Length: 354
Image (cartoon, rainbow, N blue to C red; front, side):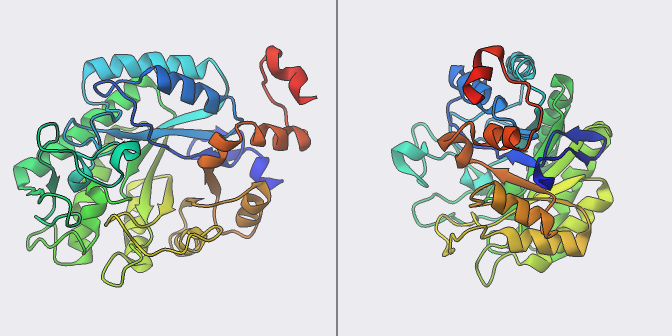
């Protein structure tokens, strides 16, 4: 199976083309990984994937989604992530990436198991920032419209976090430009109504994203993987279209990004989407065909046969799973062993898979 064979991306080689998606756990302590993260990520590092991306990690305190988000913004965060990374690297050969983000107007959110898609109360919440002073929806307060001083700080925050990720030794860095977070807010005409150099048309709406991308490319090692999660569609007539995404991805390729992960939606809390099998694969296919960059697809990919079909048909280069690795942690190990792939299993577990 081609999906289970080694795959080169940039100057790195993955053991296979199956990736573990970043899954927010909302369990950090002042941005630092908690005991839960050790438990959660240790299990995922034993799952046999080629690449594991650690959940959306804020570049600043105000860039957190909730007050329990991971953050890589200061030296204490740096030191705690170093410990986590060292522990994870001792487990398996799976490459490890981290996804950097800024929540923008999506920040100051309640934990999803308390009140999903709802803001924190004023006593514990914080003022959010966005390209324009537009509410996420009727339940949310107006964000502050970012001025040039704010934008410069946000750029420096991304650069700072990327520098920390480099010091830690991550194999891959993924910049979050989707799911309704700040960079997506600049990209989407639904949330960006600016009249200056960062708004009005597609080129300007991409400008802030690409300025950050260029600065990160300057400092991120050329022998490591650099990617972005992008939005292929807002699933709304007035929102981001696949042609918009093609323009963005062409520019990311020019800058020197190694791949894009094509996702969709999130610019508003509720969007009408038919969550059918592989509902985002057609978006990845168009980016791969029109841009010629390595593409990762995600979203309701059901099993290894589905992933194999996607890759063999040339619709994507990598396939990302999330919930399947939670629901069935050993599913990929079984597929790898069935296909006679060498697995570096712990001695304590080997007899369980005979």
